[in-house]
Length: 266
Ligand SMILES: Nc1ncnc2c1ncn2[C@@H]1O[C@H](COP(=O)(O)OP(=O)(O)OP(=O)(O)O)[C@@H](O)[C@H]1O
Image (tube, rainbow, N blue to C red):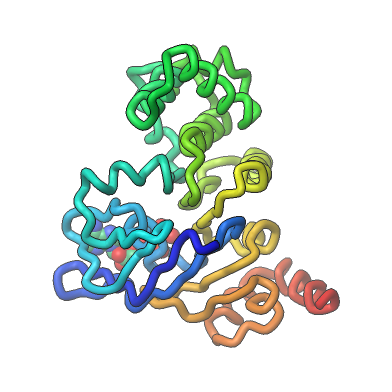
């Protein structure tokens, strides 16, 4: 089933086109990777999906169908109902997921109070369960402030918050860039496990093709606001058509080997 279908999306800042004629389709269970160099338009595209574009940027054309509903030009009040429940985000800046003035548990509780009719007891159980799912010591983290956790723990708590209402689409905008490589690998594996358990789709933004190789099944390559190539990962990695994709792969020595290995398996 299609969770997200973006068609002919163009976003502009005044008269400048930031992204142009974007087409994408993400199905239930997909790990869709959007790859491209800095400034290519990945984050703007991700922000547009959940109606998080800053005021100065406008979707000039196109549609964003999420779970069958067109979100372009939907009022903020309507969009708020979708964020958390149908779509949720995690970002590179995991600190920003929580306010430092409230304990993590209280923030999870507030999310549940806003979007569900659960009793206080049910909310606490669900919050603790969501922290346990991301393999955190649930009681301790529930009673902690964000500044009392490490970067890796905080990103796990941010994932718990993003997943607590069982969204259909988790948008992860470079979620591991600020973490050391071991912690990053653990976080990505956790996301992959949660995706399987929850049956949601992941929309993953990254510069790092090694992460794409390991986790994605679909990939889109973006350059200067345009998708230059997209498709199943095996096809794009095995037979890149666009010169830019080839150059991207060439820039990463270990991927050249992987491409060769992949082709021997295909
Ligand atoms: N609020 C804004 N106002 C004007 N231009 C913007 C705004 N936000 C982003 N842009 C421009 O849009 C383009 C795409 O930016 P975006 O942040 O989507 O890139 P990105 O591919 O996510 O880069 P990175 O990998 O560095 O995060 C850039 O040229 C950027 O300067």
